[in-house]
Image (cartoon, helix red, strand yellow):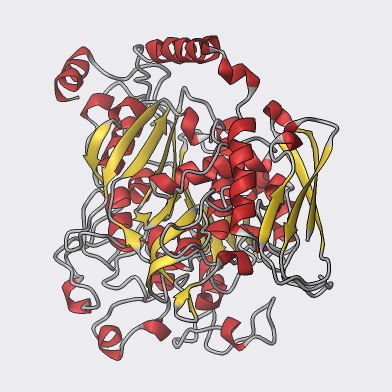
Length: 603
C-alpha cells in the first residue's frame, strides 16, 4: 500500500496533511519502509511512505478509518491502519507542531506579565448590585470536559487548540464546588440542582426539597419544600427565564420551580398510583402552576404537556412522541389561561416560529421544540430546532425589558447525555455550543450590572491522555500503542460505559472502526450500558458584581446565596438598605462600610 502525504502551511506553523491511499496486490509480508518521515512539514514538497501489507482494493463501501479527524482536515481512507504508521507520523508531529513564536522565551514572559497586569486590576472589587443574574449550567461539564472542549473549539478554527480560550476562561474569578448529595458521594443532577438553585443540599433524585424528603416517597414531601433563586428573583419583581437543551421538566430546570420526591415524575403517567393518591403533582404540572408568570421557558419536553396518545405536531407517525398525560390536561392551554389578556404571550414549537418573533414585543414565551430532549447540536435540524445560542439571545431580549432586571437559568444539558452514551464527540460539541451561548450573553450584558456564573452540577468518568503531541485531534489516537495488547487507543477514554468492547477475546482494535464518527463510543474500562457521573469537584467561573465572593473551595449550595446577595434578593438583604424605593438599585456600590468590613473578615 502506498501512502502519499502532501503538505501545506497551516496557522501557527502547523501542517495540513491530505491523505490518499492506493492498495496494491496482496502480499504476505508485513514490513514498513519510511522515506524522509518528517520531511512532510516542509511546504511545497511531496513525500511518500510505503507500507507493504496484505490488503484489498478499497471500494466506495469500505469502512473509513481516521488518523486525525476531519476537524484537522486530515483523513486516511483504508481498511486498517498500521500501529507503526501511526507511531511514525506521530513522532514527526511532535517535532513539527511548536509554533515559532513559542520557541522564544520572550513570548511566554510577555504573556505572563500581561496576565499579571490584568490580575492586579482585580484588586478593585466590583461591589455593584447585580441587576441581572445569568447562570450557565453545563450538565456533566467536569474539568476534563472543559479542557477538551477548549481544545476542540480551537481545532474547529484550524488551530492546535491547547492555547485557545473558552469564554468562561476569560472570567476573572474561579472556585471549586463540592458536588456530593446528602446521601451520595457521587451525585446526580437532581440533588445538585437543588443545591445550586435552592441553596440547600438534598438527597439524590429529589428536586426542590430538603434532605428530609426521601426519593419516591410522596408523603415525605409536604413541609420540606425549598424555594429557588428563580422564585426569589420573581418575588423581587425581576423577570425570570429558563432555557435548556433537555426537557424543560428535566432535573436541572425543575429544581427552579418544582418540589418533587422523584425527578422522573415528568408527567402523571410516570407517577405511581400511591403518589397520585397522596396528592403529589408531576413536574410538568408544577411548571405551569407553581410560578405562573415565568416570562421565558424554552427547551424540549412537548409530549408531557398533552393528553395521552395525542399526536405530536412534528412527529405525527412516531408513537414515542405522543402525549403522555393521564389527566387529559393540555398544559399549553393552561399556560395561556394564566396570562393577562393585555400581555403578549406566544407558544412556539420550531425555530422558524421563534426567530420570526419580535422579542421586544413579547411578554411571555413558551418554546417546546422536541417531544423529549432537544437534538444534539451535531444532529440539529436548522429549520425545526434553534441552537442554545439562539434561544439565549431571544430570552435576554425579552427579559431585559424589565427595569428591575432578570434572572436567567441556561442549561447545556446534553453534555451529560453525550457522556452517558460514551459519545465524547457529541458531548464536547454540546460544550462548545454552550460556550458560544456564554459569549452571546456577554455581548448583550454589562459587567457593571450583570453577574454571570458558569458551573457544572457534577463531572463524568471522562478523561483524555496518552502523551498526545501538540495539536493532536482531541478525538484522535495516542501516539503509541498499548505496551500490553499492542493495539492503538484513542486519547479519549471512559472509566466505565458502553464503549467496552471485546473482539475474539481481546480489546477491540480501534483502527478497525471509524473513531471520528459523531456517535463513536469511546472505549471504557468497565462495561456499563450507561457511563456514570464522576465525584470530583467542579469549577465555578464568575464575572460581574460580587463575583469575587466565588473563590476557593465551597459547598455547592453556597452558589445561589452569593447570587442572591449580589442582586439584593432572597433573605440576606441587610446590605441593600440604600436601594431606591422603586426597587431598582442605584448604580455603584451598595455596600456600607460595615458590610465591607464584615466581608473582609469573612472572605
